[in-house]
Amino acid sequence: MTVPAPPVSLPDPRPARVGIQLQPQHAAYSEIRRACAQAEELGADVVFNWDHFFPLYGESEGKHFECWTMLGAFAEATERVEIGALVTCNSYRNPQLLADMARTVDHISHGRLILGIGSGWFEKDYDRYGYEFGTPGGRLDALDRDLPLIKSRLAQLNPPPTRHIPVLVGGGGERKTLRIVAEQGDIWHGFGDAHTVAHKHRVLDQWCAKVGRDPLAIERSAGVSHKNPATSAESLYAMGTRLFTVGVSGPAYDLGPLRDLLAWRDGRNRASNRR
Image (cartoon, rainbow, N blue to C red; front, side, top):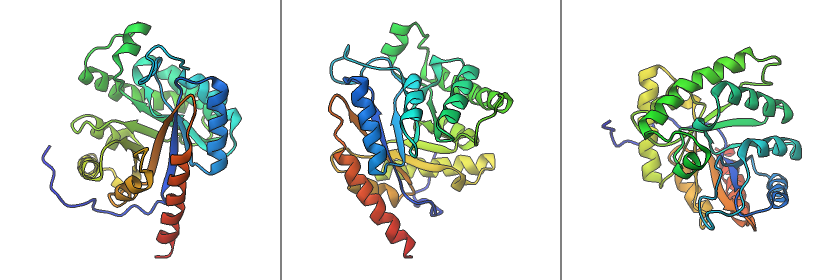
């Protein structure tokens, strides 16, 4: 898709929010839980984990824990912070089962779940756990097919979710992923520098126009640099991003980048409120 060069067309009035991804690798669960509690105490808006079965870096057969079981525990271990996966792999669970899992964690957390989801990409997970890897296009088609099934099941469950569970879709594909976001997502999460993210925002805005969706209905989210989170966040904020997430790995979960990002968030929101 050919995209013109102008910046994001409409400013997003939402305040800046900060997330941390506690990567559940190379750590005992007690260390992960401690980091989750500390992140909430520091003032994070969202605590994410990820949905894999093996570490993505470091010792390839190192310690690792399952995503959704952990989210249920996070729901009990916290009181304020939103929780979610960045992101759930759509291939690993029946979509109607996933809807029931999400509804259950929504209730345990009293309405603090974000349903982060993507099409999946880590071939080792598929091979070792017996899932068919297929093709990137096929996995995206499955995500496109399954999101309406998830939403349909959520609407049928008794009791229903405590709120509309926000759907965060991760991925940057311009022909399929961003079209899926425009049609079915509440939050889009991507990666890259400000120029890359601004380009993706313009593509997403174009898809919103095609499907009749208000672009401001979709919160823009991005990962930020671990080394310079505030600088990274400031440049992304100017492009329309409002949710900024830094990832940290075990066994020693260094929350220094989170502290820096939170200080930036508070200053940025104060400056916006003065306008």
